Image (cartoon, rainbow, N blue to C red; front, top):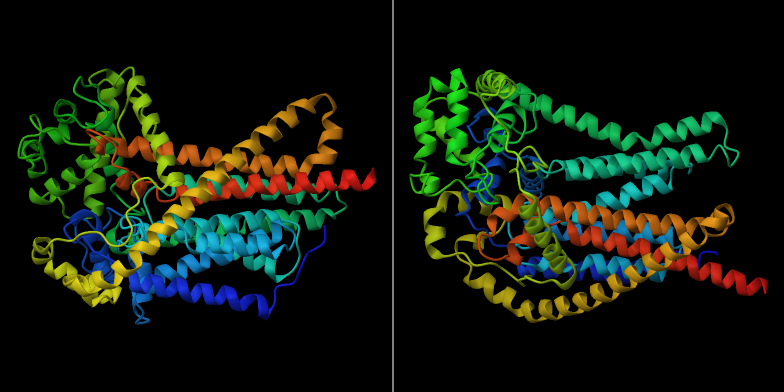
Length: 574
């Protein structure tokens, strides 16, 4: 089918007007900063002073990734508020989706415009925890969409020629790298990049069958790998910078390095007191200290952990929750004078880990039986506990599709929280260019005018999401049935339906990515929900899920689009 229209100045004007409206809403709505979250929001703001971060290292300098603080620090030099940055990111996400849909749907501008508008006003941006909170999650959602849009373009353009192909590959690499370093759990999107590159290489090699020369095939296949090369360079650069200033060739040392490996070992030690919420029970910690001659020399460190203020000074009566052990251990190392530098801590735990490996090998230490430790830096869970995690995974989609737990506008910051964290708030005001962070009264009046509109927006998106997801499920099931029915004459089926098949498979892949992502997030975050699931918090952790669900719907509808083309073609030939 031929393109239905060209994209010129006239078509650009309404899209630009919508972008300006989106920018206005973001600035009008504002942000909020819960400075009392010392190891989350406050920590990120402290990282924004790049000179101090690298030249005056502190013991918590490498516990989280620098992607978001560095981005905000650099953007703040423009003099524009942080709300402008988030709006620009969402506009960028909408534009990237526009051009992706324009290519997929063969120039049909109305489809691209619908996708543009949908992404431009996605509800996440207006949710108190996921969108207006001055924290990295407000940037992750649009970054994920931009990254996937460019990754898909990289695959589609595998056999293209010209500068636009190279630019799309460069942008894919740059945005992927930025997205990866925004948060410590970037490995999930790295897996997606590797799959995309593999498909892109396959697409390039397929060109040989379409009469491309061997030289062209090799060139195209190598170019497809450009995003991966850019990421590897960025990763080496990041680690090299940390090695220069901190003495360790790591991105962060809370989950990586010898320190992270030590915590993972504690999470795996046999204990009757371990459950879904307690990953590092007191007896597992004691066993590790007893099994390591090096740790045995530091009873003061064990005592500091056992009596940490994080657990009301008694981890036996008040067990350490979830991954808090990694935070407690680092704080105790500092308190006991054992944190001198990242390099020294790495060397110390390197020796300890060797001793623990030997202890596991000779039977002094035993791993928890009857459990699965899916990720090394999380707990080991039983089959029954995994069922509970699956339940949380299901709830994740309630948030992504039905917007369950979404809170429009700004969150609440108490006067006491402002008073107790004045210094950090002053820092945040500088980097966010938001003078109201110590007195929200005026900003709340502005934002409250938009709350009724946002509530209507939430309702509209809820209806759209449900309709699209039901339609997508129906399409995928229909295409699956059609595929299995055509297995007897597979060659004939693929000749007629190859575009339908690959678009349906891509939709199914995004469904798989969504399920795996939600499950892995639930594996980590379920410990937080001691009584019932707090959907607002779950949505906060599942920040990338709505974007992934959106892309699954896009490719399901793309499959339907080609189904309609096939039907029209059949009628034409009758």
